[in-house]
Image (cartoon, rainbow, N blue to C red; front, side, top):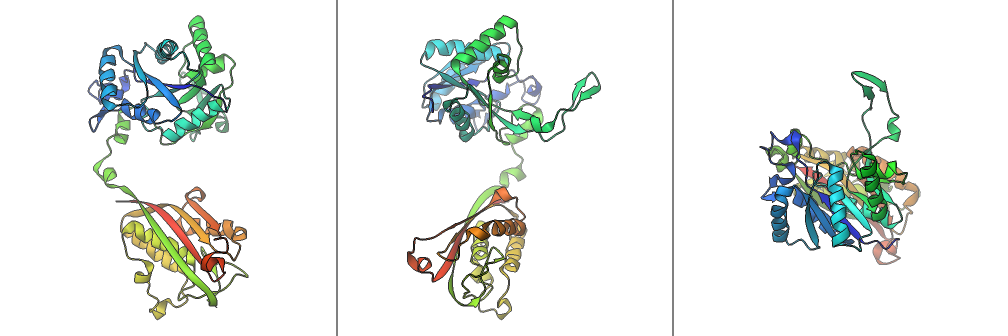
Length: 396
């Protein structure tokens, strides 16, 4: 890891011409959400990075004093300065680099971010910064392109690039300072006009490292993007809830073991009224927790003879139906099986696949893990098995 002195550059000097009518001529970076200007979201996210030593905010010349006052009142925990922007984005970056050279001569790397991307997370910023610390000259976040892209001239298509080789690039972008300064000097010398700083490094023959971006890191560009900042009443009412489930079954003559609906051959039998699937039972209780509902013991009592030996997947379907009727959608499940025996690893992939099927979720939205308790307690003594589950849902 390189020992770099990292500073930030936050660009908030744009005019936002495409948004003028929708925002009543207020530049988008100064749109207020709950009394706070939009650019402040990026300021607060970047300022939260432990590796950041300070930042330069680039603002329209007429708004520099305003921004200084707002940053002072916000009590930002790292040093900062405000400088006026230029006519183009690259001119604004050049102004920031010039100011940084005088204000922070110890700077050796920078993180450049457009404040029109207010949803960039601290995790993403740290990921880009980490790439620089690991030795990259430049690092940028990008996402695979999902649409087919055409290269055109006038009204005619020329060719279709291979989509697998394309990425939609975002900010923040990280750079070692000296190569970036040299690239900007070359831009002035050769009258280059670019859309991001990585493009300058590319023209100078410097390598640019790609890290995975965030789909939520949307740029506020067009009037319809304002709905992301001011969601409708229905969108506002939807909230995230998390439920926790826990279940235990003893070993003994009874039911052949199932976990996540998957039969586990050679495993101890479990004592249970239903089929004894401890994992699905924990999962159901976690879903019911999201609904603020009673547990499965109340919904499916072991005193009901109709439930004798019933498959837990049938009960799970009933719980999911209850969730749907309540306006809740399960979006993630994190499950852990705790047992000394049997060994779960040979069955884990099949268990996960079946839970994905039952919940109708993609594989990256379900986790199935297993652990022992190091021969401690009743599971360690091979007297039983237990499972825990954490479910995330979106509820209205």
